[in-house]
Image (tube, rainbow, N blue to C red; front, side, top):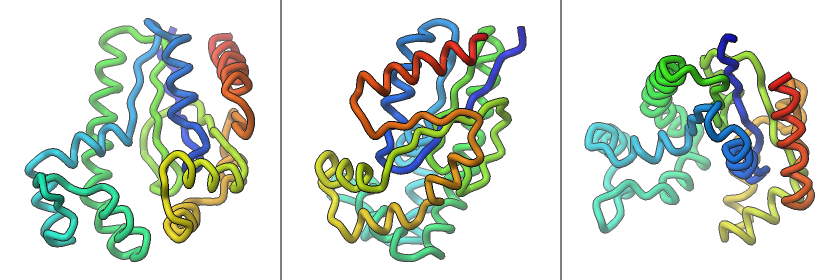
Length: 201
């Protein structure tokens, strides 16, 4: 049976990582997982990427420990679209290369599923090969509440982050499956279990 590749995306603070975490508990052995956020986090620790980012943004994005400050970088790029595109130009080819290696590894290990968690799947027109798109969605009210309470972000930053992404309705329209995550964790879990059953059938 050929491997099924799935791209899981959604808006900021809609619960993408929570949905992925639950899929991991269901598909413990049968699936491989790739996180674009984790890939970026890893890339930002490399000398090569730090050098490229410093060349564009200067020392202001380097913290006292000599590491790239993700919060500082985020505030800059959400205020300046041209700088955001420059950052994407540095990171996205590297993330895509890592995604390709994840696909090769999943095939070599005879996995039934490969799940790509890619927050900006549609915004950057990600070229990852997949058979299904899953969108985890929530209302903007819920997004704002989570970003404020769980991440401690200020209103201005929250609005910039939400505004920089495609409307969730646009993402939902492009999805093969939608998980609506405006409720409880148990409600999310029920939907993820149903999704897994649908994809297995």
